[in-house]
Image (cartoon, rainbow, N blue to C red; front, side, top):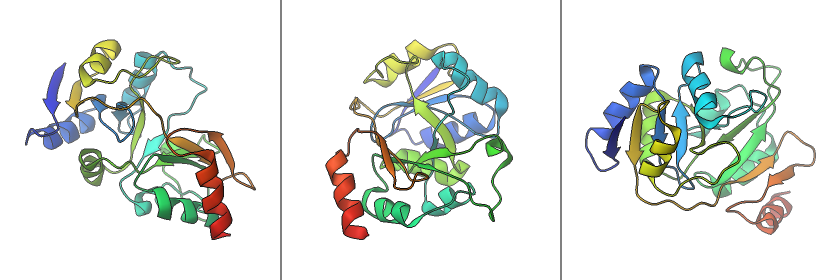
Length: 207
């Protein structure tokens, strides 16, 4: 398992090449370390489940670099999503979207009723996804356990399923806040880095 620091000039190229070759990588985000793969590579996605011992019924979240990449997932992007994304993207806000009846979705999303998506505030990861497009990324931990604060710990914990570790230094253990914007009205399903009261205030002010 290879480790590169985000400041290494080879890190971005190697990370993109590893993903395209079907590898699973540990990457820094703006919250915790994540375990990432290309979503249309079924074998790589399966290795994420194996590494985490994650139940098959639990779908993996998606990270994107831009709102355009989010829309390319074929999601229905309601007004409340526009309000929240304008305030907290890039940032620690995850939104669960339903799908549009008029926009095509990628085939790897065919069996889903919704998808949880975030644009992270991490320059390395954003640059990587501008190269690869959106990625499935979930916390780099065993299912139900705390995510280690260091890249080395995360990589060791999830070996041998990880091909590459990108070290971005120690990271906070506070996850993103999850808001389901498919629901009417939207539902805060997990309170994390953004307070429930701040979400409510933003929605009230943007109504």
